[in-house]
Image (cartoon, rainbow, N blue to C red; front, side, top):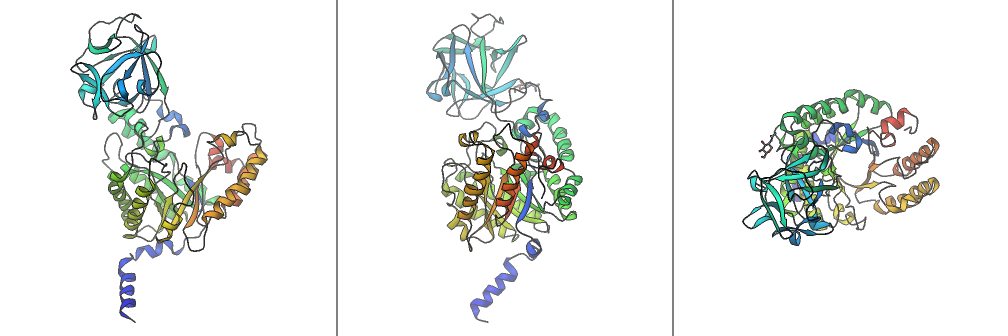
Length: 498
Ligand SMILES: *[C@@H]1O[C@H](CO)[C@@H](O)[C@H](O)[C@H]1NC(C)=O
């Protein structure tokens, strides 16, 4: 044995944790997986009723509102988009006239403006200069009983905000009428209300109610019986979306609540019992990698970047260390659906390298790298990934979310799978490169008129093509109120047979 070979030998026995051999020893690729979406990371559309118990549930974090002064018939506007005064002189509303809510409790809010400052009390009237909300940036939205979108805004000094003139908005009004010519009355329009994720549900219920509501959900949404069902029906793995706060369980930062880690532990136990594998997928990153509700975003701003790499690697290392001893751990996915150009190639690959190395300190389980969504070359990670060990590229294939699909008939949708998706997969597949995983797909498509047989054919085409992905595929999702998005429903109703 040469010295170099001896060093390598030493490294092999010491650098790679021994438990990791068990992890991949019996891994049968490709995997047939299903996503346990809306379990540990909330997505409202999959079960909207979870939000029903929240007061003022139309005013959750990230809701975007505009305020029209009924007296002046002009919109409130953060001049220049922020950094200076708030005025009331705009006849129509767009970005600078739109305010994103940060919910303090069910009636008190902060208003975040276009350039991300918060509306607050200034010496010359209302302004948007503070980068962090304090009491002076907190307002009560007082809604009119007869018309909830007729509001008055009470400032921290107890007085109401009033549009005195088009260029002077102050918080010094003590009146209480709801008349149109009252300078403190505004028509509030909710213009965007598309965030209903983990942040919104936990902050919406608040610290008294959220822990129980979430615990009940985690206990009931996915149970041992589900693992029994999955394994009996030919599924071999689950992909489990988790949020960054899981690493701080049982006391994650507010408003998140503890308990999701125990639920994940249970999933590993059930997976072992029913012979399934687990992919842990970091779906929600602090500061948000895509602005979507399923990233845990508070207000829709996508802010993940270089300064978040270290803390995100720490989450990955926490997960790797915790589950390294579990034989069912198949892979850890470092980040779900980063969106370009907000997440840059440089920041992403720097993070992927560090995340990969953090996983390797504990286990040789696969490391999954999500392709960026947005205007990028789908092969952009290939050569980078080839320098790493046991990695997988994750692509998500939906015949949805873009105009082109709306005009396709059923056969065209199927042809698109057989031609375009098939070639997309071939392009990503190379003998010595990373494996490929179609980590999300669904049998739903933009055909409201499709018959059961159409769905069967569309699903089968995808099973055939995605079955060639070297690492496997993952249906989105296991359980969902919209039937075609629920693999359980699709199997029980004979739309899909594995
Ligand atoms: C809501 O927050 C405001 C501002 O911090 C506080 O004054 C008020 O007491 C809170 N209300 C409830 C019900 O907690």
